[in-house]
Image 1 (cartoon, rainbow, N blue to C red):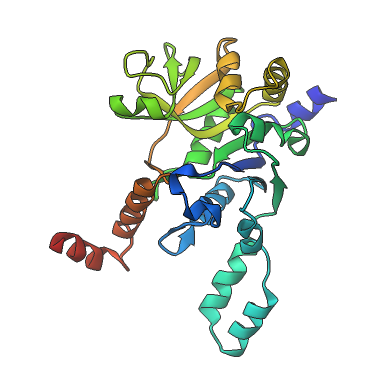
Image 2: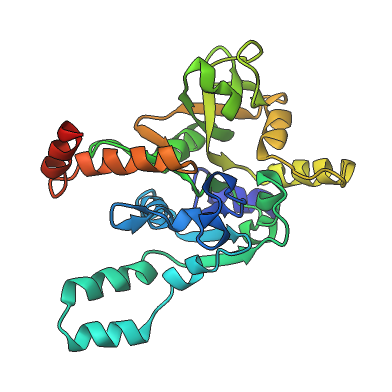
Length: 296
C-alpha cells in the first residue's frame, strides 16, 4: 500500500508542519504572553507571512505545533464575527478583506505540545497527521525574502526533493563566528550532506553552511526520531538535527543553498533587521525610512 501511495504522489509535497512550540527565551519577558511568531514584520505577523509563502509553494494543508501561551495563533487564523460585522457597518472594506484573509489562506490545524523538548520531539508529534507522506517542515521564526522572479524558500526546497527523492535541507552561508548558533552541515562533493553538527565551535565546524530550519522530510524520519527518544527518554531536548545526522550518514540527505535574504526573527535584532529590510522593499515606507535612518 505504501509503495502504491508513494508512486502516485512522487515528488509532490502537499503538507507542511510549522514548529512554533519553543520557549522563545530570547524574547523574554514578552514571550511569556505573546508568541514570537505573532510579532509583526510591518503589518503582518511572522506566522502569517510563513503561511502565505507556503501557499505560494503549493502546500495544501498546514499543521502548526504550538506551545504554552501561543493560543493567539489559533485566534488569529479564525473568524471574528463581531469585528467583521463592525467593519461591514462602518464600510471599512479594505480592513474587512484583510481580516478575512487570515482564515482564507489555507486549512490550518493546531497541535499543542505539552512539553518544550526540542524540535525533534515537536516534529515527532506530527507523525499521524503526515500519514506516511513526505512533508515540508519549517521553523516559525525563520523568514526568507526573495526577488519577484525567484521561487520562495519552500518551493526551492520542494523542487530539489522532486528531482532527488531524498530528504532536503535548506541551507545558507553564515559568518564563521556565527556557526556556534546553528546546525552546520558537513557537505559532500555535490549537494550531498554527510552529516550535521549542532552548534559547533568555530574550530570544529565542518563548513559555514547553516541549516535554516526548512526541510522536506520523508516518512522514515519519524522512525529515527522514535528510536532516538526511546534510547534516552531522560533527555531534556531532542533536536531534529539528531535524526537528520543519522539519515545523512546513510546517504539519504541533500542540501539546497537557498536564494534569498534570510532573517532569524527569533532574536530581537533579527526581527528589527527583517522589518527594516521589508520596509526598504516597500514603496509605502522606503522614502520615509531612508530619511529617518539618515538623520539617526
